[in-house]
Length: 137
Image (cartoon, rainbow, N blue to C red; front, side, top):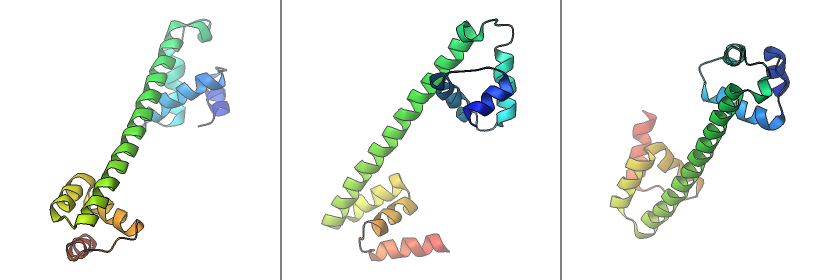
């Protein structure tokens, strides 16, 4: 949903910064369509008078800000996890460690592990080939 759509559906004009936080609220509620979200948002603020200075509006924006922080942290954690697994996968490759391979498959998942090997030009071990055949069946 674009800012202009939001403003049109709610009859509320917001700043770009405020809309970024409102968008976090919208995306956190995947099961709701934009029209229903706008109705909910308008209803949440009904009777607030000056919406931009209302406590409810500021609270909704604060929740949006917290959701943005949470999503940023989640994204960073996923990037760190992927980087750490790549390091461990390199070690497993270098030392031909079946134990480390099994650990990686358990933690990363078989598809992600095999995708990493293929994306990084690593040779598939016989056990990797068997795993791939199992996944393809």
